[in-house]
Image 1 (cartoon, helix red, strand yellow):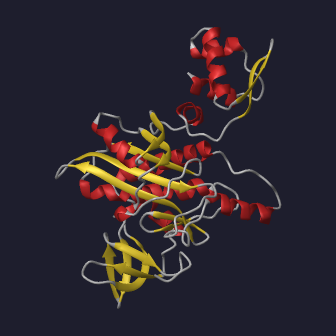
Image 2 (tube, one colour):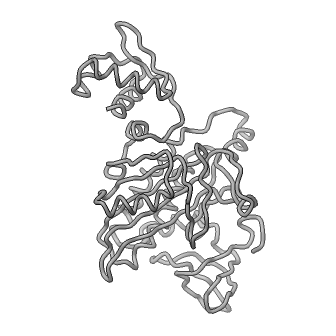
Image 3 (tube, rainbow, N blue to C red):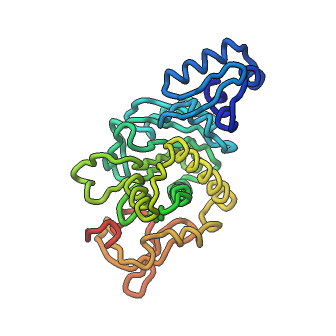
Length: 336
């Protein structure tokens, strides 16, 4: 109910009477008053004026269920939010919930991950209040080999969401990073439970560095935050516009993911947004180093194909890369 009350308050420019809220929620005035008090105790500045009603003046930067419910504009993604103060990792928790029957479109969000993971088991720094750490539970009808392409779907969702912000120009480093000004601002990890010819569920996790933080030494030279890019943009624009709330940023990613997911499911590949993906691909026409198990080699990345594989031109031969780690010269400001 608190989330619905916040939604109504956010949709109104002026005050909303207690009676209106009672009718919207189908509850008593006492129940509305108690919910308002709980929201105020949680940090929401809600003005209550006799004979006028309630008005939302300010909100804390939190990622709670009421906050996310009040922001939600999607059709099926986010039908259920699981919000935690702290978890080991949102992907791990999402897999637990999926095993317990959590439905398609459920979203797991945490303020802190104490064992956040990136691709190939790399640790992901997930400090409280500094980022958006979340995972989707998806249960599509797919073959297991098609599931990894959801990482590309998520990357498109993030660059489009961040790109809505003035002065922010994100790019994709294939396959699972989003970068700003040559540094990593977002990582994506897709995992699944599957049979030989059937996917039980897929979990796609996204971590976005939003606010300034102290990064671990091993990533300090390659990581950045949205706040850093936003502050630089403010200097160029000569304004002091605040960075949008994390809950609003998260909702924007959900909207974009839902849109690109629907395109993906029409063909079970990325052909319907392939050209658009190439516009954001930082690797395109750049020298890359492919760390292949049979031996590393270098080439020029020419884009991706419909199956999401990176096309690398190597000694006049085009190679499709669908596994292994790709290092990109110049993207993170260092030569691997």
